[in-house]
Length: 621
Image (cartoon, rainbow, N blue to C red):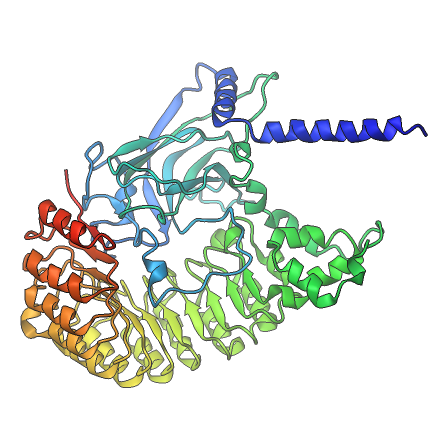
């Protein structure tokens, strides 16, 4: 064969790669214009008028700043017409998530991140909203009133929450997604991303957020869904533009929903004969394993299809010691768990947060998986996993004897009696029960038997009757406790604080935000400062009684302090804050929002003197 032909082949391939690269790196403006062309070419019947509707109901969410028993700063404020927009500022009538920035990742209570998390999955929180009528979406408007820019993904679901008949299949489609970006302005805005069209009607929309780049809490006021009743018909000359193709490194829906193909790929018992292994079979087994450790789970599945050698490596249980399935929540089901089961016999860290809802995972499927894969589990993340019931917690307590960390955050559908089983997990060092229905009797039993606890979150646990009793038990039994979250506990008093301060001298982090029964005049905050010298984070949010004496005690005794929130106090002066900043050299976050004696001028002066400290001062327009 003439040498010209191989050269032509190479040139052809090079030309194809260049065209492909150009197609994927087209400018945002070009792609947006193409998308608008698609929209303009959609033929809509005159009778197919656009329907505009506000959210009817908030049906699920991962966290919120507010209380379970009020409307202030809660996700429920997203239902209905706007309460605040177009005003800007910090308003109680808006929806606010629990965290912002990276401050919570820098705390002693922060967990280590999971390996193998796809770089394009960066969602931290979510909220799901229902609307009255199912429509084919044409636009989604999000009314943001303070520190916008947290929303990074919008999804639509095929299931109708108001239908009396359960759907045969539930599908989630990404309407729009983007990496977290910094929005410099904190003012209100109407956010209207350019969404893609989907082939089913919906009245269930999910917003996913990432607040890591925000300077303060984001506040959302309302969500508006625009759509048509009948499916739009596209002109034959146009094709749908997938928003996931706008940027070469943007979110890719194929990875986000790859569990569709995982089932088929894991179940392939016979590999097709292909080319030889090249030189891979010359490498040490351990080196190949190390290389494969850098692949995401979908990529591991794809690689298992290439040859028998790599299939053996991809199915090795050592590849699944840390297994993060949260990024695949939209597709993960019983079948997925069944196919993963044989490969997860050595799993130590397992993240099933956000998974299994709306029937995707059954109690039977979860129990079967843990009976095979639970013996080595050390860490189990189950945040917002609403398929859980008492049987599931019983299985966890029996099948996971080595469990040291359990996260049940926002599992608010778990019945109170289910929590009794946690007391059997005597090796627990971390327990997160934020927004759960744990009752006092069950919690006392857990504290009695789980004396190794180092990190405990009881924020917004509304069924606990007497937090002083709980605090007394913590002080008596949990001598190794390092972090404690009592956010919005409704009735702890100076007596409970005294038990905590004397019984848990190793405490480094204490959240007493929105605890209205604590009064500075009883000396409770002075006692904390004197008996807990290792404190790095202290939140006294919305306690009106915090005064200069408390701040000066912190300055004298808690020199390791890094984060302090005294939002809402009327009794603290700029002079005491200056003493604190001079003494606490590691202080990096100070929230003085709505502190009546700390005006903007005082904040500017303190900022000038202590430029390394982020001093937060919220406002209401």
